[in-house]
Amino acid sequence: QVRLVESGGGLVQAGGSLNLGCEASGRTFSNYPMAWFRQAPGKAREYVAGIGRDGTYTVYSDSAKGRFTISRDNVRNTMNLQMNSLTPEDTAVYYCASPRSPSASTRYAGSPHPSAYTYWGPGTQVTVSS
Image (cartoon, rainbow, N blue to C red; front, side, top):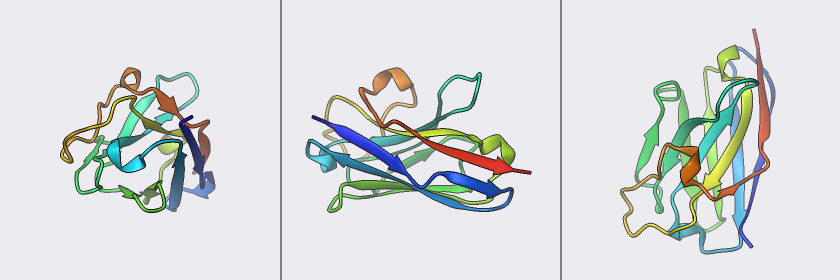
């Protein structure tokens, strides 16, 4: 059974940083791209960043580019999202996600569409105060 669990959320002031973690279990982690999404109250779930199976290929949303860094550790079966220069607009529940099918390519970071992902963590709340 595939399980994803996020950690590291919390309350931070604008301009601050947080490092989110996602721990995966239940299958061979290194075969799958992974992604971070977020969802603010009353808004649709939004793609933040994705990472290929070996960690060498990453993709970021425009809002994350230059401020967030996605990474993964295929030995520990974990993924991280380092978030810097946070603003109140970054306030949301953050989710890690993984697709059903493995990827043959290391240069594929997954789809930016939530419907492409089968497995989701319960989410971790990030609140940025002004």
